[in-house]
Image (tube, rainbow, N blue to C red; front, side):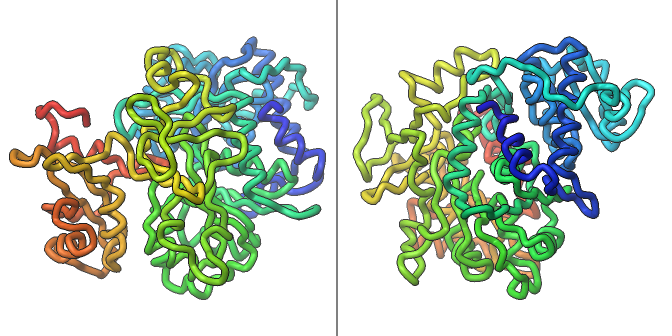
Length: 518
């Protein structure tokens, strides 16, 4: 299936149903489909061909998302642009990935006006919600176009998205995903999120639709369900929307879940409609996961993936968080579930040898879920995909029950005095302290040990803990080698727009001029 076929599947099942809700506005499947057809026909009338790159610079909004659907319907490739990313990062992505079409909201018009001279490759500028002197409004631009589906010859290996990597380890690369890889991703989600009969899901798009939240909304619309769109993941609005719209599924990064759990009155919120609260994108605190299972309910769903093998590599389903009527073991809860059915996952060592269960090495993936490669970077592609295996850069193991465990990112591992220290293991202990909201553990230069362990900690409002207390806690649980030697307290950890902590930014001040790759 082409990616747009998933939306059309929902339209055929529920043509007069509500596809999207935002505030008091509703958008039917037929209205969204017709607008996406007019956008697609407008793009083709302008002469844009298959795999031309287009971007949408906008906050979460159903009309902005419909522009993405229009790009796909015309056979173009979407470049996700983060509305919360820095202007410099977005400029880099748009230029480096050869964007020729840009839809944008009026809110961003001053930034766009400033950047126009620096974006010579863009041939079409369209303002989604206003007529501007140098950019027609979306409605004005596509008004005369037909609402019929354009005839586009989709091939399964056509590129449909060029997504920037998270930038957690350096300048972002453009991950090329195709109809084939996205179809596999969506199939995995539709298998993992099971619904019976004619049940219509209600998905809450709270995290940016320019990242995981947009893709996660597609299986809902494919079933003829409704996507409730929030402009931003504000905890109060999010909790209100779950109860008001009887939301059945949503995706949130761990950092947002942590904030939710601290909301006053959360134990009085009606979560009875919720079937799946999927967490991913970053490691999850075990203690906070247990708290979520108690307060929100037996609906938590772990997920593992990356842009190069989008999101659906493995799932820890809600029922797998339990062993009968009791919580599952910490060993199970710390896993990211069992691999999905349409992908093969193995643990491989530095000699390219496949390891057995319980042995630690690099997590490698193969199958139709894997990206086509990095945009205009064949050397990086060859380094990452070897003999058909995608090398994820994540270190982990598969246990004897078949559950996949991520120890840490390969580049984040700390070598102190010849011992390997995996930051996530230390972070789990620090997260367990009630005063800690979030934390990141990094290696910093040490004349004696090569690297020493440093923790950088965010505290919950109104609570406190000393560095000595946290170090003592880690020594008690992990021993002195893995315990932090120093602890810094910060108001906010640096994060990517997707919510990942940017450890390279934390390491930068310590390693500049030392010769280590940050």
